[in-house]
Length: 112
Image (cartoon, rainbow, N blue to C red; front, side, top):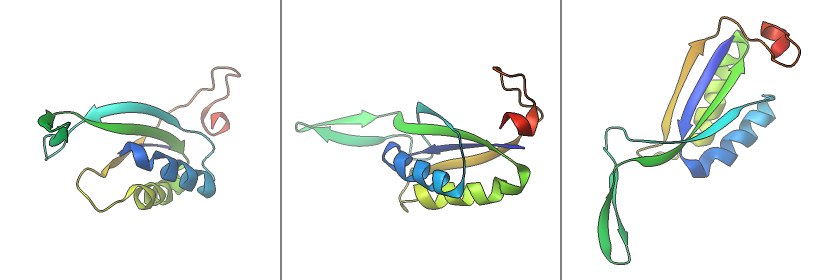
């Protein structure tokens, strides 16, 4: 199994969620995040005053899928989240050794 973690722009979350649902992903965890990459934040103007935004708001989503679906799910996320502009986000894949469903005690594939 693979844990796929993606950090994307908040306004792209619904597009990514819908694309994953269409692909057949049945569950995900979403949390708010902030950070910066190479651009180290950016400058905005509010009511005529310029100010620095050091930490850019993002959304972090996590899904666990079978090994065979990992590359396809990454492709789905990238295509749905892509705007072609700086700050689109990142996706990374981590191997998962064991999953336990707390309610029933089911393990691994049965817990998905």
